[in-house]
Every structure is written in C-alpha cells, then in structure tokens.
Length: 159
Image 1 (cartoon, helix red, strand yellow):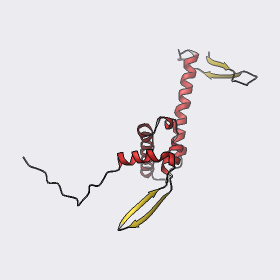
Image 2: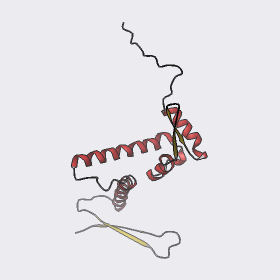
Image 3: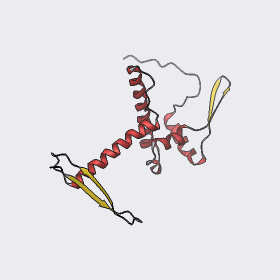
Image 4: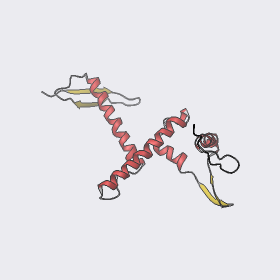
C-alpha cells in the first residue's frame, strides 16, 4: 500500500486551486505537513548547490585529471566561503539577502585603474557613492597600515 501526502492552496488572484502531492516511503511515520517541509528543505538545499555551481561557473570541470578537478572545486568552495563570510560579517543588514551574483557584481567587478608613480603601483577603485563609506571601513579594517619611517627589524628579547 502506497501513502501520499497532498496539499491544496490558492494564491491571490488565482481562480483555480493548485494541488501538489508527494509519495511517502513505507517507513515514513511523519505527518503530511512534515513530509512537505522535508521536501521544501530538499529544494532549498538543491537551490544552494545551484547557486554555487552556476554563479561561480563550477559545473564544468577544467580537465580530465581528477586531482586537478579536486583542486578546482576546492578553490571554488574557498571562494564561496569567503564571499559568504564577507556577506555575513561585513555587509549591512539590507544586503544580507543578497545572493552571490549580487555580491560579485557590486563588490568585486568594480572598475580599477592601475598606474605607476614613484616606483609604486597605485590602484584607484571606482565605486558607487552609496558604497563609499562601506569601502572605507572595509579597507581600514582589513588592509594593514604602514607606519611612517623606515622599517625596523624587531629583535626578540631573550630572558
């Protein structure tokens, strides 16, 4: 005997009811509501994988070598983790719902001009005026500052 969980709903503006059903396993002792909640969770997990694969363009491994492909996916997941960490720790509350594509578009694909001046490479980042404050705080927090004067070698004191 096969069990099915069914649900019926009507969205605003719809004339007809919508129906969905899900086949249950024989060992399932969950309520129909629990079956659908698990099914929605599965869809959310698949959407998360889709975001990683499509946004970072990881759905085509670069070569036939298994070790190289493992390194490729490891670097992709490192990039994903860094972007998610950036979002959670540094972006304002209104940007917490952003997907990876939006973070990449607003924060990583900004125009930059690089020039050489007095034997130093200078990068000028062209950012939108609304994000200027965030970028200044981010740079102040994460980019190390050089102290004035010549660097001094620190000598460890022996006790």
